[in-house]
Each structure stands twice: as C-alpha cells, then as structure tokens.
Length: 72
Image (tube, rainbow, N blue to C red; front, side, top):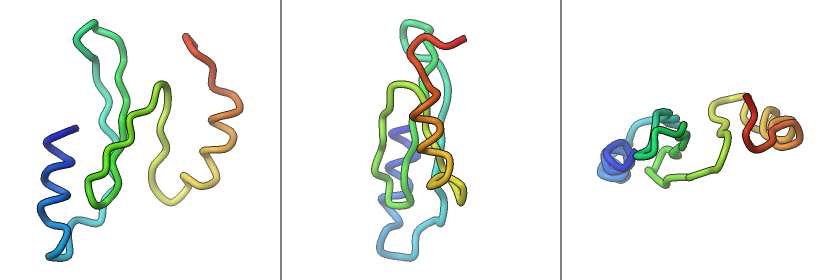
C-alpha cells in the first residue's frame, strides 16, 4: 500500500490518477489485511473492512452495523 500511496502522492499536482485504491492481502502473521487509499495517497488503515467507489457512502453505514470481529 505504501507503493500505491507514493505513486498517487507523486502525481498530486499534475492531475493525478482518479482512483480509490483497495489493497487486500496477508500480513506478517498470515492474517488478512485490508486497507484503502484516496486519490491523493492518504492511507486509511482499518481493522476489518473498507469501502471504495461510487457506492461507498451507501455501503459504509450497513457495513459498520453488520461487521463484527472474527467473522468467518
């Protein structure tokens, strides 16, 4: 995510990229890892879920309500 963030921040004055990145993978302890980044490269590290795109304003509320730690 740091690489994606750096690439987005580098282009902030020249028009940049019009993307909202979501990166998912595994951390050092082999646990799931999800993070997102805005168009300027600001990383948003969350503990469980992330929303991005045109429906994010509608999805964030229900996702916060229904999401619980250690869901299968």
